[in-house]
Length: 143
Ligand SMILES: Nc1ncnc2c1ncn2[C@@H]1O[C@H](COP(=O)(O)OP(=O)(O)OP(=O)(O)O)[C@@H](O)[C@H]1O
Ligand SMILES: [Mg+2]
Image 1 (tube, protein in one colour):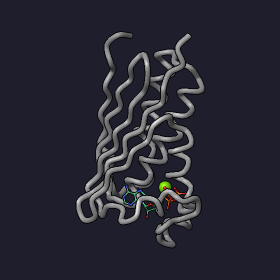
Image 2: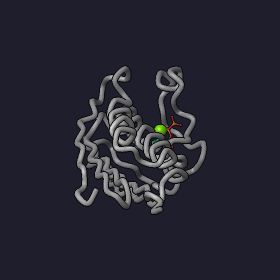
Image 3: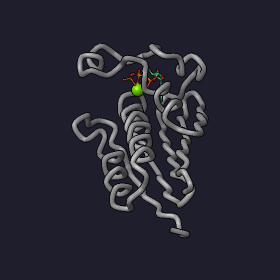
């Protein structure tokens, strides 16, 4: 796999029932490519959490996934409210999710900490009032 495979997704901002479609599609693609199962699990968890965050906190956005032989890179871009204090948002248990979202089982404040935990690299760039870009990389162990 010397060429990179690129997958593009638009994440709708208003539809909880469809949230997770992009990460499911990437998981299927990685399985089909026969990638290491631990890599698949980590990509699926991290991307799902990022995708849900775009739906809950940012009214949707776009995701680009680049699958290479060395790593899987995910870039999640939204045009939501942005994150004022990234260090605070990264803390376990910190959440601004409203009650109606908590009633659906989200809002434990564990998404960003888990994205960090399950990836090898994660950077967040955010401008308040403009949006947020999250870049994550999961490395593929070389055998
Ligand atoms: N894309 C985003 N745009 C704006 N704010 C965000 C975004 N992603 C996360 N945040 C902010 O960071 C906080 C923490 O995010 P995190 O994913 O850790 O928890 P959560 O989404 O509130 O709950 P959980 O992920 O456990 O369901 C959110 O409550 C929100 O305030
Ligand atoms: Mg979250």
